[in-house]
Structure formats: structure tokens, C-alpha cells
Length: 262
Image (cartoon, rainbow, N blue to C red; front, side, top):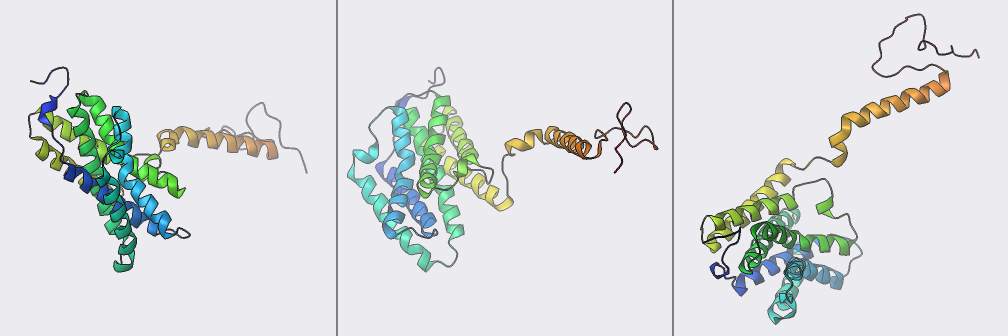
């Protein structure tokens, strides 16, 4: 029985190996990404990789009000560190690193989203907050990575869909759970859907509209009016944009003074 938008906790079990795979992939992607920046030494790349791998899970556990798993079990930091060091070596072995980073990023946010939402549901969290926690867990590592690299946070800027991809995948997982689909299958579908949305958005340049684009027409009209006012200050003639010329011989609006002679 599912009551009040909740899924019974006994439905879920998250194997430690699955969580460690997500941490490893996240750390590998973070180190690969950081390795492309200049003036970052090997230790810096390793730290950024580790932070990318454990950041999402850390935020997830804080939101759930429990001790972060990375600080209670040795395996997480060991796997994150090992994956980060592997990520430092891969750029020298791969000629084209960007596609690998994009693929690992898509898989990483899918896995962290699935694990985050599943863990939230396992603790009896209602489905809507569980979706939120899963999405935060998915993007948390990437946000922490960007902050440490002192670059614009990808989540907050126009570009390929990032949080939206994780949101779609996590929502699919929760819906499948409500329909009675086994948690392991629902998790796999979540990862595949998230990765597909993310990769397709990169391939075709999908993105949410820029905030300014929502009022572009109004801003264009405002700029035209400002331009007309600026022109009037120099010429003495006022012509509002969109107004028809009422008098072909009179170069100024009715009631206005004609331009002064030079």
C-alpha cells in the first residue's frame, strides 16, 4: 500500500557497491574536468575530483538529517581518491577528453539522482521532497566542483540542460516506484533517462530560455524609446518608435519646437 504519497521503506535497499560506483564515476569526471585547467597542481586536481565524487551524497545526507555516509565508512574516501588519481592520468592517454567528461557527467548525475531519491523514499520522505533531494544530490558534486574552480556554476547559467535532466530522471524513478516497479529497474531507467536527456541537450544545444529572453520584446521597445529620447536631446526632434509620420514637411512631433539652427 502507498498512502499519502509515500512509498514503504521496506521496498528499498541500496547496495554499498552501487553507491561506491557513483562516487567513483563522479570523482573520475571531476578530476578529468579539473585537469584541463591551467595553474592547478596534481593535489588540486585530486581534491576537486574527490569533492565532485562525494559532494552530492554529502548534501543528500545533510538534507535527510543523517550523518554523511562518506564520514562513517572508509570505502567512500578511498574510492573517491583512487578514481580522482585515475582521472588525472586519463587526459594523457585520451586524445579527446571532452566526450568522456560529458558521458561520465551524464552517468554521474543519473546515478546520484537515483540513489538520492531512493534513499529519501527509504526513509519515508514523501515523493515531492524525495524528488527535490534526488535532484540536489545529482547536481551537488558539479556545483561544488565549479565553486572550487572559481568558474561560473553551470547549474545557474544558460547552457545544456543539467538540473532539468536529473529532475526528469528522478521524477521517472518516483513514478515507476508508485506504479510498483522494482527499485533496481526503476533506478536503471532513471540513470538512462537522465543520461539521455543530458547527452541529447549537449548534442542539439537544448537549454532553458535565458531570463532576459522572457521579456525581450518589452526590453526592445524600451531600448527604442531610450534611443529616441537620446536622439531628441541632440536634435531637438522627438520621434517615438512605431509612430507614423504625420507631416512629411515637419521633422518633429506636433507641439515640439523645431531644431535650432547651427
